[in-house]
Image 1 (tube, rainbow, N blue to C red):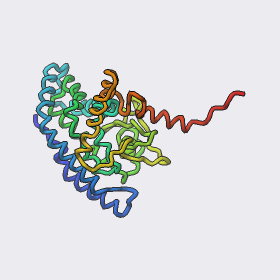
Image 2: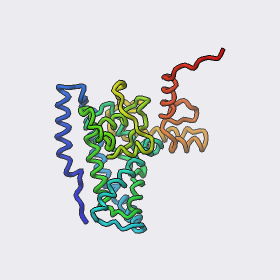
Image 3: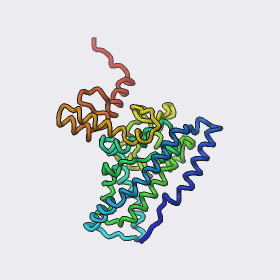
Length: 302
């Protein structure tokens, strides 16, 4: 069965919405901030992701079809398969996204999406060039094993990608409360892109925010603490090649200088920010330090 590609149909809407948001920023700069070089870098990253995706598709499809041969169910294209994969694919996305923040080798492929210090619709186009190489597509093999056909998986991935485009904006404040409870929104995703200590490593949702609520990674946007964007150590570059590969260069440098086998392993698979001598800080360390700074002093015993 042939299913349409949601992203292809959505591209004209992407362009129009970016133009509209940029125009809003001319009159309401607090609602939309654009920087020409930053947006151009994001666009170039998006085009690169699209081109590299074609090269990776053969390998991903081959492995997926091989796993599908050992499927435990036969969903086919029945109406309920579309309902089930909506939740199943979003569940896989949550764990892919979470693991991409918790382990440096996947973070190296994902960090480019967070590298912009601007948060607007063009940022949604800043996609990975190296995710296929790093194997970030492997969580979706679970769907093939369960029995979802590859075209259905690809279709739902496209739906998720299209949905996540509109949440990359500051122009929308809050959606209705019931919507905010179940779905990922601009407010929730601003938190995800923020580098404030209280916001780090939160809100990994694709479409449904319920996974974050269920697994304890949900953080509400706090109006008293506006989101600051980018990465903890800003790269200060609009060069797409620097954006795409700087963390990989960092891994190679760290591994070659590691003093122990364990150190080399942790530089690759440990949390981003880990270092042998403790001179750097992981997200957990940053959050703990911030919590200590904000906690009231303990009374001293006489």
